[in-house]
Length: 328
Length: 243
Image (cartoon, rainbow over all chains, first blue to last red; front, top):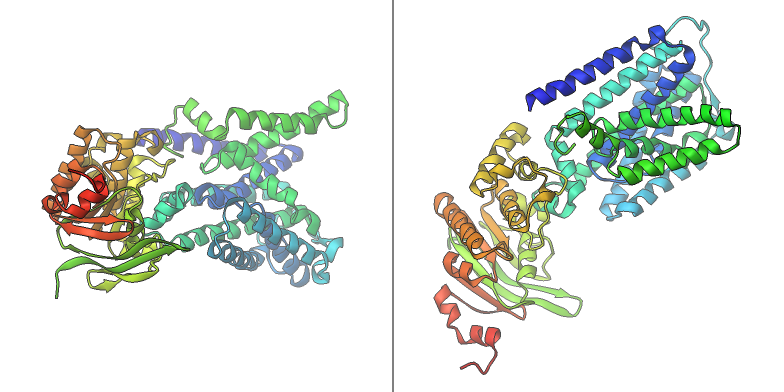
């Protein structure tokens, strides 16, 4: 057991060392792609806490991305508040939103796809709200001023080069992985999985189901909104129709579904596969020169993965690599 | 002052117009094994669900160890000291056998995972599931799943264990093993057990006291020998014109 764990740890540390060295060799294009991968992995892990661990299906996670992004962005634009302080506000608002959604859903026993619909509804009407809220730029968007000195990295204000953003995204992803692992190994992790597998049986074992599910929602919401803050400062622009969109909610969960819901490494692997697939097919599509080839091929590839490996790629790859991971 | 661990007093449950359980009352003395028997549809599982909090009673009271637990939810009743199994087994399919039992044990020792794992393995050994601890629960056979139900409920360290047809589907040899395990638990730890059972072989071997339900009402109670010769019991099982 410990040997296998060691091998796993060795692989992870090797990967991490490689990732840490990438900016020395990579150009801005590759770096921007890797930042996309990392943030996709980070957001996937955030969603995974709620869906993968606790089995509560959210299809409106763009809500928390948007709330984090707007809290961080608007406070910075209006008051020059550093993003890390803005993130606290973003997390607080997201936790509040999660509390409302969780209370409605869990108290009134809204389950499964109906709960997912509830989460979509909240994301959608928040989008409409932001579309009409002048202070955050309404539908014409919110723009973050670029750094006065573009070559100087300011980590506190998150203004600087792609290399700086890359390291921040890498740090967030590593932290999210470590945090997810820690959660899963504690009592709360076992309780979440018990509820995911059979809520009634979990209840009969004395677990406070409402409270336990609520904790999953709140942790997931807070983590997701931090990802939103990052996106705001990385992209420098925010539009309600894109940040709160259904499209984003789906994009956010796709990597985790492909990689393996409920697994620790699945969201990371899924993000890599999706981005590689997307970029690879874009290049291929440009060579073939037919419009829409990329989208069709992308869709077919996703369907193939889900048909062949419905549990995700990571559980399969893990056993191929000889890494016993038990049930996760 | 009586020494009953569980007192069921005048318990009733109506589903819309249907009276599933009506004025059922009995006691489970501390340290005893009591069986609840009756034909299909007699209201045994409903009675269980009322005691365990899976359903709220329409009327009557349930007293555990001097505390009124009537109408509390399942989780609160488990915390009060009643562990239960489900007639239709409900394993945490994606978790390992050991992890299933750990979930029950984690309520104790401030959620210490290592202690819960140790406690789980002790219980699994007791129920002869020790060599399957790392198997995913979904790979277990039905008899093993029944054992897992018992193990998981035991891990919550209940004062009273409710067993809903844990012998059903077991072969006679397996049934005898389960009887031996339960008798052992009862003797060694003083665990009080209330069980629903159709397998008379197990009822006769295990129970100190038997309560018979029919059409939602208690029609007889007494020692196994008393109830099996009780005219009303014979009537409901065999019909009126038995010779």
